[in-house]
Amino acid sequence: MSTELHQFEAERLLLKGARLLDHASGLDERADLLIEDGMIVRRGPALEAAEAEVLELEGLTVVAGFVDLRVRLGEPGREDRETVESGLDAAAAGGYVAICVTPEATPVCDHAGAVTALLARAEEHAVTLLPLGAVTAGLKGERLADMGELARAGVAGFCEGNRGLQGGAALRGALSYSRMFGLPLFELARERSLAGGDVHEGPVALRMGLKGEPRLAEDLGVQLGIRLAEFEQAALHLQLISTRESVELLRQARSRGVRVSADCSPQHLALTHERCLDFDPSARLVPPLRPEEDRQALLEAVAGGVLDAICSDHRPAEFDELDREYPLCPFGCASLETAFAVAHQALVESGICSLERLLELFSAGPRRVLGLPPASFEAGAPAELTILDLDCAWTYRGAEALTLGVNSPWEGKSFRVRPAGLVNGRYAALRG
Image 1 (spheres, rainbow, N blue to C red):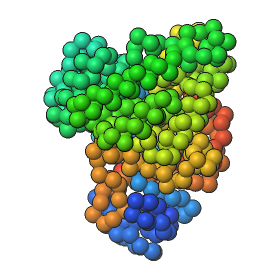
Image 2: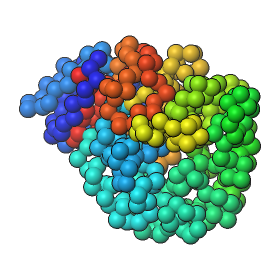
Image 3: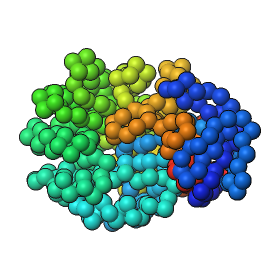
């Protein structure tokens, strides 16, 4: 399959010959789909439409559109890492119809002007950009940003980026305000006094001679977040869960009816801390990659419904940032274009869960977190669709990727499935 992605706008779009798959409604049939002015108008065999842009999708599968809950771009301020355009292009290649962008930028997305500028940069792209507003001014943790102004400007939620909110008082205040505006609060739960290691605390850290970060840093942060969400009766979304104890805390909270949701990354589902032994900076993540027992706990939590979503946690870096000692390299990896293929390999191909469950983790789950209605194939519904090739042998090559980020842990890795495109309202993108 070609690496090129053709994006276009069409008033009338006809999808021909694809398998339409929607587990929520029980839909699984080969049919055509007619879309006009961004809305689904008809579904059935052998449809015809005058002056329609026709997409021949024989052998491909169309599903509810993917939504990513955690993406970091470089623009504004670090366009060498990722521009808005290149990040959205990478998202389209990953099959996403919408991505939530964290507020870490220069300037920080902590005021209405920053939100407006981001939305303007993305308004004619096939992928919808959903800005997340900073909880504190400048992400400094000292005083709350004007969350009301951010809400009115159009943020999809609030987030403190990789720093996370520190201390119970700050998190409690953020929960109270986010509840007031009816928007989700995203939190990367860590006890900062115990965090800050280069890799997971354990034998791998000892062999590498690096500072380790214990599970306890995350476990205490998750426990605090759950208790405050329960006390405030507010919704909290915990991001990038990585430990077995965090999974158990979430399971118990759900049984008590606490309004807490959570996600994890494909990287933590597929890799363990042993991947760090070769000092590959693309494996230097926050939270750090964990031992096998934690990975197994995450796999079970995803399959069993304890976790609500899988987010790419896309954090691109440019080459000069990686050409230095391991502890000085930036955290994160470029992952938008590989997220679904990696998750499919870790979950579906290994027999951990069904394809339908995986699709829920990429679409319905993230939409519930954001308070969005589920995507639908019914007449009158907005066209928010992802196109998949479920029989596609391909190998990830950074030189062919659309992201500017060069820090992918999947260079040279082969996969069996791949997003082939998307339809999002009047916009579409198709590989080939």
